[in-house]
Image (cartoon, rainbow, N blue to C red):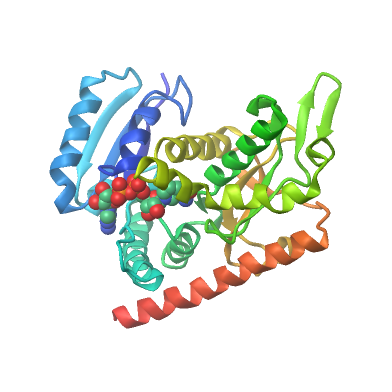
Length: 334
Ligand code: NAI
């Protein structure tokens, strides 16, 4: 029997947490033969709700679930974890400036960086979900220098999956036959969903989405805005933000990172830039990546046209600004 993998979920009493933990316990993240132990962290006001989630996990009698820790103690939560899914964060409330939300969250991520650095397993893989996801991941990376930077990522897979979904709807093909869209940059409204290299899998080989859509204007306008604004559309319809699709994307992200992407297929992940495609090194930026042997690498050599270049630079510029705001917030904290 395989050794259980310890998976930390922070903010586990929240909406995404509630959708995510049963998926992990069913093997949707790490596979149907991989036992797991769940560590769930939340804060004191949510402690009772968190205990309720633990009770439900016990009641679900998941065969793969070998243990559950529900705690408000960050050290206990981080102890020996192999995978850390960071969903916990301070939500944006009415009347709050983006900067106020940023300030609360970067302080949380700075503190949790130290806990992970000291107590997680040496090869721990980290996925930051809580917003501002890229900048929280950047702060985590910078305040946990002993965690290899390749092990720190942020979630843009939901945006990637949304882009696949929109192309599937537009071309009326099953989503499983669409591949290789790209979400570049920030998990925010400046993200650049790019279908220029996307293909549809057919019995006669792969066909270019750009040619099949035959309407470049749609790809440059509506497709962009639908994907960028999808989060807001879900809130409007559900009066709550995306949770099941976010949880599913989290499982996709980790599964592909751990088990690899199939040949000729890439996915989008927020990772530390090495300067590829002219993006400032050190930023956590969403790139097309392929994964093998538990490691991601940025897909190289894609042709970037002028339209794409401008969009990719605009979202990088926003990330540079967020980074500087984050550091200003941390200075003020002192
Ligand atoms: P939620 O508000 O329902 O849950 C957040 C949970 O985090 C709450 O239970 C809260 O008590 C907890 N929390 C707050 N501070 C904490 C701390 N210091 N340590 C541990 N837990 C803490 O929010 P929801 O809907 O589950 O979303 C979670 C985050 O994910 C939000 O920041 C949201 O913006 C972000 N998000 C990101 C997506 C992405 O694609 N990157 C997609 C959807 C949501």
